[in-house]
Amino acid sequence: MSDMKLTVKVWRQKNAKTSGSFETYKVDANEHMSFLEMMDVLNEQLVKEKKEPVAFEHDCREGICGACSMVIDGQPHGPLQATTTCQLHMRHFKDGDTITVEPYRAKAFPVIKDLVVDRSAFDRIIQAGGYISVNTGQAVDGNAIPVEKDVAVKAFDAATCIGCGACVAACPNGSAMLFTSAKISHLGLLPQGAIEHKHRTLKMVAQMDKEGFGNCTNIGACSAECPKEISLENIARMNRSYFNASLTTDK
Image 1 (tube, rainbow, N blue to C red):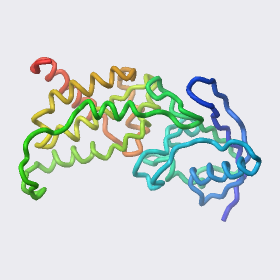
Image 2 (tube, rainbow, N blue to C red):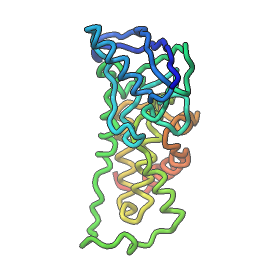
Image 3 (tube, rainbow, N blue to C red):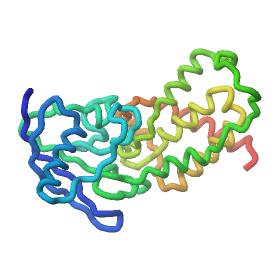
Image 4 (cartoon, rainbow, N blue to C red):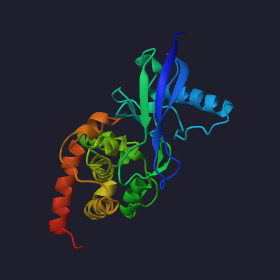
C-alpha cells in the first residue's frame, strides 16, 4: 500500500448568501482510496481538530446515482473519462500533489454549502414533461411491444443519464441541453412516449430556459465530461423535435 501526502485546496462556503473561499489542508491518503474516501479522511481530521467538516454530496458510491458532484482540478468528477467522483481512485494522483476541489458553478445550481449545490432545477425540468398518459390497459410483457433495435439502443443510451450535472458544470455557458435532450430522447424514442413527445419537448425546453441555464454553442465539453458519455446526437435530435413541435403543435 503506497501512502501519499497531499495538499487539498477545498472551496468552503457557509451558504448561498455568503461569499466563499478556498482553504488548504494537508491529507495523508493511500492510492487504494477512492476520492470520496480521501475526503472522508479529511473530514475525520477536521472533526478531531474540532473544526467543521467539508459538506459534499454522496450516496451509492458505485457510480450509479450521480450524487458525488464536485469539480476536481477544473474537471467535473475529475481527470478520468466516463468516471464519477466516487469511482475515481487516488492512484491517479501522485504523492505531493496539490488538488483543487470546488462545487459545480452555474447560475442554475446555487451553492447550498461548501461543495453541495442545489440541482433541483433538473427535477423541475423532468416534472415539466409530465406523465405518459396513454391508456396502456393491463400490464403486458415488455417484449409484446415491438421496438426496432437501433431505436431501443438509442433510447437506452439516453436513459443512462444519471442527472449529475457534470454537463452543466463543464459548459462555459452553464447549459443544460445535454441533460434535457437525453431525457427527452429516452422518453420520446419509445412507442409509449411518442404520442406526447411534441408537447413534452416544448414544456421541458421552456422549463430549462426558465431555470436560467445558458444557451448551447456546440462546444462539446458537456459530452466529453459526462460520466455516462451521453452523445451530442441527443441535442441535435431535441433541436429537430423542438423546431417541428413549434410549427405543428398548438401552444
